[in-house]
Structure formats: structure tokens, C-alpha cells
Picture 1 (cartoon, rainbow, N blue to C red):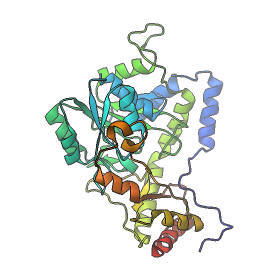
Picture 2 (picture 1 turned 180 degrees about the vertical axis):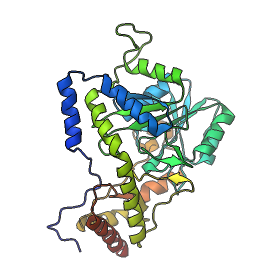
Picture 3 (picture 1 turned 120 degrees about the vertical axis):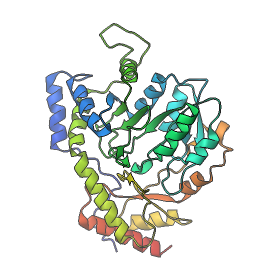
Length: 366
């Protein structure tokens, strides 16, 4: 039983250490604080994580998705197939360019887009598929790419939760026309806030750089209509420090996940597909029927938990009028059952023990 004098175990614990603070101070003292050498260095260093692709840094993961769709010329005449079991930013980016999101169901094991559901959702207006590597598990990219090739569609990867994930050794973010990452504080690595777009297409990369910076590459030589979605050098400097530590953190996340897999007996462990490298942005279990009670018990036992996501996107207010009638049974089932547990690399062995013991105790009471 949890000792109430012991601090609760948080679900997430962003790292802001002395190295991150020193990097931020160094940039502030330099006077080069926006779209300078730190951003260029961060882009170059991040490229090694996405098979050497061109990388374009922006101010958030949402901006990464939004600008990519803009750069691909996707707009009001188009549809983009997305999951509903995701954070709203995925669909919001589609709406922000004037296109229509079309929601497809998920694979119940991986929580990622199901290729059969995507195939059924393709229409003459479909321009792109936007798979989400949810919780850090890669989507079935080979099957989705085959569908995209057959129908002449772009693939934009929402890799915002999947830094370092891979499928058959190929990194998330290196499959589609572009892959988009987030550096929000709770992600596997962060830059306080920021995003990155990875693409193999040099022309697309140049258009993305124009779009993020008021449509100009040279100062005051505006070539197209653009926006101000730049990353600051302070964010990039923090991101560079975090990127250096990411491989070690990822190894620790995986070790933590495997430790929980071995110790939790009350509920089945998260599924990992053959060939998939899961980076465990979230360690997510299913609790059929009694999830609220289960979470209350975890809280009593001093273990944090959360539900990602309580409401599928197609049932959120902005999307309800057009999409509330949709039948997405696997999405609805996941929404009702999933619960995520602490797996972050700052967990101590004693905390991991407490998480496993709490899950087993709470599970036995269901």
C-alpha cells in the first residue's frame, strides 16, 4: 500500500537541466535569438535521426503539420484521411488549410490507422493520408504507402510522439512526403516548444522555409505569401541538448516499459508489432469497463495516470456537425478503455516497482 507521505509518481517529467539552462543563457548572451545558427545546427543534427532528410524547424508540431499541407498545395478542394483517435492538432492542420479531414478507424492493437479503413475512406477528392505514430508506435507504413502509391496520394507522417521510432529499421519521419515532429515539453525530447519537418524533397524543403518566414529566404525579398512560424534560437539550443540525450532516454523508456511488461500481471502489456521499434511516448493499457475506478485506485496508491484521448476528434465540437454520425467502433472502444502510466526515463527502480504493484493491486480490485 502506498505511503501517503511518499510523493506521487508523475505521469510525465520534462527534463530541464543545467545543460539546457546553460544553452539558453549562451544564446541570450549572443544576441542571435531568432532563426540563427542554433536553428541551422539543430536542423542539421536532427537530420541524422530521419535518414539524412532535409529538416525545417518551426515553432510547434501543429505548425509543422499545417505548413507541410500548405507546401504540398492541399486546400479547399481536398480531403485528407486522418485517425480520430489522436490529438486534435492532426485534424486541425487539415482544417487550417481549408481541406476536409476524413476520419478512418484504427487497428485495436497498435492504435494507428488501419489500412483497410483507409482504403475504404479514399474518394476522388482524397489528396493525402496522415498517419499518426500514436504513443510512439509506428503506423503500418508499408501498407499505407502502397495505398498512397496506388491512388497517387501524398503521405504526411504525424510523428509528433515518435522521435526515434522505426519500422524494420527505417525511422519514423522518413517514409512519407514529409514527417512532422513536436518538441512540446512532455514529448520524448523537447525544445520548450517547437516542431520539425523532415522531407527528402529539396524543393519542398525550400518552400517550407519560405512559408515559415513570411515567404522570404533573403531579407525583404518576399517570394510567396508566408507566415511567421519560425523557431527561436533559444528553443533550438535546448533542442540540441535534448537531442544529444535522446538515445539514452529512449533506451531507458524501453527498459522501463519492458520492466512493466514483466511485472504487471493484472492487465495485458502494450502490443508491439513485428519489426516495430516502439519508443513509448506513452505506456498504454486497456481497462475494459472499470477505467475510472482503476484510475481512482492508482491515484490512492500514489501513481499518476491519464487518458489519451477522452474524446475522439470526430466527436469534438468543431467536427461534430459533419462527422458525429460516423461509426468508428475500434476508436470508440479505445476511447473507453485506454489508460497511460508513467514510463519516462526519470523513473527510479523503486518507482517502477510502485507503478507495477499499484496496477496489479488496482487491477485485482476491478
